[in-house]
Length: 510
Ligand code: ME8
View 1 (cartoon, protein in one colour):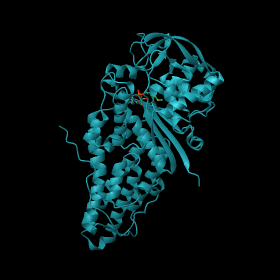
View 2 (spheres, rainbow, N blue to C red):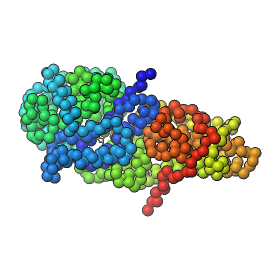
View 3 (cartoon, helix red, strand yellow):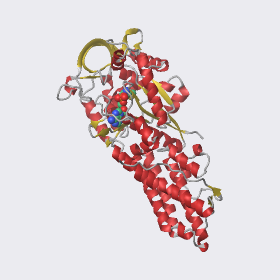
View 4 (cartoon, helix red, strand yellow):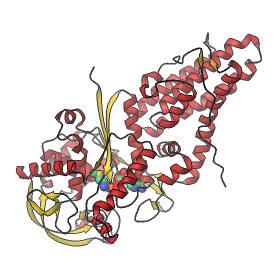
């Protein structure tokens, strides 16, 4: 049988500074989706990377007395270390300074140029260097500054190549209107429709004022505009490999922050149309992490370093918080107190206690052996129904990328299983010889619930899921599939479990 394929991307981040928790947020979401799709039997390609060219990087490198490549090499190493520590399962990592990327960008440029949709002209415009964006007068904010970052723009005049974006306005509008899921959420879609209806101007796609970029083919005085270069990363890994191109392109989801939806849903599709390539299926614009002092941003200096958070609380605790606390598509608050509350109540308490109590009782009352079950009470029946309903609803929610709701579903079931312990009182059953089978049934239902829970949380908190698997002494964690969570009663009988070990220590609040 042919495997189903799935391709998801994150933005490729600028190595102009270390990454903050906002970047970790986007990459964690993409990772949870990628892992869920693998769990659901898809052949997944998950891509992230670094967007290394442009004037801003060149200036920063110069100010530090190093070459741009020396400068980015070091920062990008930090990106990769962060993704490793956060347990990100990307299949490839694109650096736009790599020759494999340069080659594809030049080929696409040439292809569009040969077709007549790239021409040479002269450009005078208002340029925001931090955002690498040109703006027209009417797009500036009320202070005449960049509408995205609100910093001053510079008037720049240069000979330049242009991409005939204006040629594609009608086709793109038509595509957006005919494909309601092309831009999600709807608020972003409406913004894009309004933006296009105001008219699209041709896009200046080359620069001569600096040289840290990919040269324009046959005109090396120009480097290609960093956004034209960057979006092409999404096809770089398989552009020269027709089988893989066929397999993974078009991408299923470009997950991006809401501020760059425009580049992904208008400019990138127009470039693809010009190059006669299919368009991505969906652009998902997620919201921002806000701190008490506003949107987290490198230049404002209110960033939270994810590496320090991982050191302090563990990768899975951070992943849990990001996935649970913020509804995808909306802005969300990042707050240390809220993080600690979640860790203590949901992880240490709800999940940790369920595992600990269950394994402890099996060790204490049955010598660590999970016995066969026989018969079921009304309470057992309701727990089993809840388990299956939870797994089924979780699957639907994850398929619809309602991650936070999916997490909440699982935790409702965890609370329910804890309550089952209180209702059935295994410590009482253990004192009564005639209740031996009921005790076995109860403990069976609990470990089986934990098996299902560990499968459901595996895309969200992969190392915690694996730890639970190990404590349950189950094998083949790597081979689990979502179907394994949809049937109650798969836990092996006469099976020896391990001693419980703490998953999340309680954080003392000073
Ligand atoms: O824009 N909250 O790179 P970038 C949530 N290189 N997400 C945030 C965030 C916040 N406070 N801050 C950043 C670029 N992000 C380009 C992309 S793609 C072809 C080129 C996330 O380093 C969010 O996903 O500025 C946002 O879109 C991305 O980081 C911007 O990263």
